Image 1 (tube, chains in turn yellow, purple):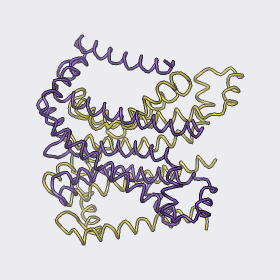
Image 2 (image 1 turned 180 degrees about the vertical axis):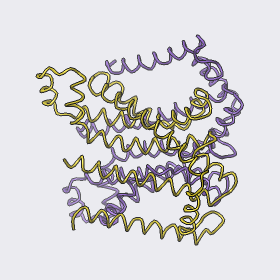
Image 3 (image 1 turned 60 degrees about the horizontal axis):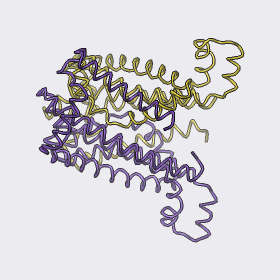
Image 4 (image 1 turned 90 degrees about the vertical axis):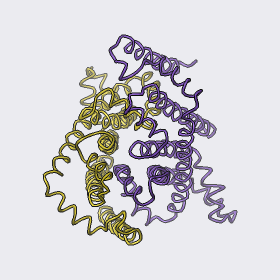
Length: 247
Length: 250
């Protein structure tokens, strides 16, 4: 059986198993705290037809888009800068790793004070989740480039912009893409979390609101949609990732 | 001191001084952030006053519980899973997608199920951490040389003995990485849940201080969490390096 077929079969088995697990959990716990897969699907179908939902969803998507752009831009810049300078890289890498390991959630109140309640705080919160993994993966990718490629570039007297564009970037793309994939997930989580703690719009806010109103239908549907969105995009990115590494 | 360490100390000192200068010059106003020296003074005062120790103890206790359960469970699942290739292949896409799922979205459900107490917070910490431990354990087990497994078979070790005496010790550096991840996630899970909805704990106190513009409490508490996670991370990284060096791998 080819790898492609096996992957599809595995995915189908996995999804089926998760749905069964969900149904069983529902049967055990019941209506107090859960909805069955079928009920969730039906409510979700109704929810996505309302304007209110799309208002929140577009707010989240917009914040997420900006945050992702910042995370990727800054992450790539930091990664390339540190990857090219031995001393700076050696000094900063452990510090980035340490920063990566701190619970960024604790920084949220500081961001709120700095940016005020609203879009920019959400964007900043999403971005700080994504920057470091993108930077770390890029740093490792640039460092892992074969020295002969760099020497060739120097022999051809490329300036640093041309060096990045025509040698570093193409050679490091597979690793960098893995960083982008991780950065994507973390930025999305960061943005939604930001909305959960303090916002008046967005899916995170919708979730928090439903929580305080004890509206299990909405909680289940929004969670379901977020998971499907995250898993769907991640599956696509993973497929591209695999292809890039296969080259 | 090594050059790299010097540069690191220089960067940190420079950043703190820059913050101090910006705060004193009023570029960053007092409501946003007190100057760093002020935070340190508040920190000492808060620790001596001791009013928040129960909250700190409660959160740290929950972090510890979440960490231990996620860690032990993760290594256990990882070790068992390593023997069943089919199951592992099926779960692989779940592992690859897992950290794209906002686990915090399940927090409300857990509150409804278990009530607003320590249970849901610890559970979130476990859920966040356990998959990282499983994946890292599997990664380490993949690298166990065939000859070690054969030796274990020749010595007629049971699967449990093989795991405890041969394969897992071999994976020690990976298990330390896993510990770092599990600890970070336990913190994120517990403190984050306390932020969202809780009756007490450090996350709750930080949120409470935030709504009351009580920077003298908020910043020291945040500092405490950051210091604790950075120090723990540093200790585990050190240990990992030592292990790798002893094997001639670093």
